[in-house]
Length: 182
Image (cartoon, rainbow, N blue to C red):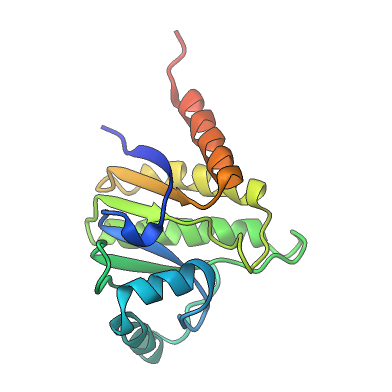
């Protein structure tokens, strides 16, 4: 059995999944956008856990992730993934974005989680072009799911019509690729 991929225009903080992914910064500090919304919804314990993780492990490098409890969220866990800041595409941004998704799925798999929701990492204030980031996200998730068999459901939580359309198209493209030829 394979995992299902869903695209939902939804508030990621309200999703009933095992883990949500936070588009985090390297210091795991509360920020704006998705990061700020997750920290606000989770309550002050999330910031304390993030500070503890940084004190114990150091900052979280771009392309990596850390995991903390979800506190007041419906999700039991928050995976803080650090995506790259867009610098024109010549500074390994695509690779680093792919690694952020891959590392997040590995953390979820290591905890035997069954469901995870992703925002569009790096596409807000980090400036990664949405269309390119969408393809990288969906392709990386599909590729990595073969190595994380506990994950049964992946949600791409979108914000806005354009993001929803782009993610739906990328998921449909992957479904067509995986469909057996008759």
